[in-house]
Image (cartoon, rainbow, N blue to C red; front, side):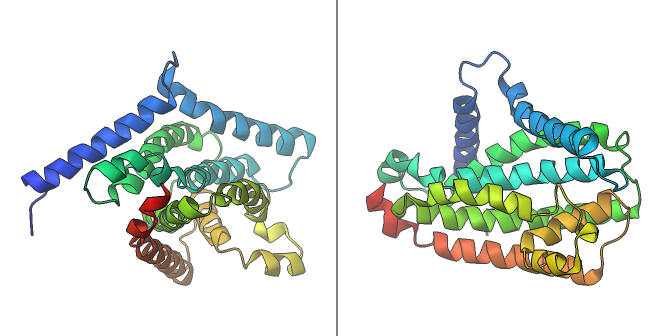
Length: 258
């Protein structure tokens, strides 16, 4: 097995770095504040929902602001990867046709660029965590496990969509319509325990909701997630990533459409 520092691996590592740098430069080309703008959208969205559900339509839920901000921050990662994944191949069509390299590097670099921006949001979230009433407990040890599983889940979505959108360009418009609907079906601006039994049973069919409920359990209440929930999060993340990788293996079949 080649080491990470072998010439072949180093070549692809350099390509990933260049692709990530290119994505970051393109996104904020000519912008004076540059990376600072990556914090603008999540901050505005969070402040808007915070104002609405704290002062206009106040919630009786304890420390609802923490629940809301936690949900919005993690939703941003999902929404960015799902909405931008269709461009990972389409925007690099010339590179794919002219250069032989592992095609998987394109979605990997695209996702890494998004994670770089999202890390800035997480720094803001971490700085506000205690002020919003976040709980520091041993449950935090389980947060990285759930977060990695969550990233695997949405990366699986992204890999599949990156291939689908090459041949089905309408997929982007479907995603633009579906994502806002999924947002309201996910426990971000509402709490599962506050729902009527009938609606709660329907909401339980949203697999994304399990991750957000688990984030709330860890960060909001400081309760260690149940083993069943942890295993289910890991299983769904691994299954999604596997399906996404299997679909991405067919990327060479759609190159002619780029």
